[in-house]
Image (cartoon, rainbow, N blue to C red; front, top):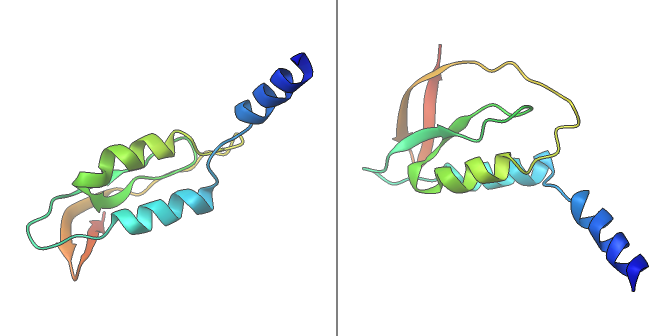
Length: 94
């Protein structure tokens, strides 16, 4: 029984979200309708925040913390004028 428990713990501790899976979640979270609020969400050690629907921001922020960064770090641009445009949350870069 112990080998099974140890193997399970190793598997669970090594389990994290891939950047591809995360970016798919972000793409889905950019959908918006007129009147929706768009915010920046999803920043982490190896991820820059992106405009998403405010209703999905907590989910995206939580998922960002589960992404395997492998020690990578990024430098992010600044965004302004977050808005819903043509059904997608967008922003201007500074």
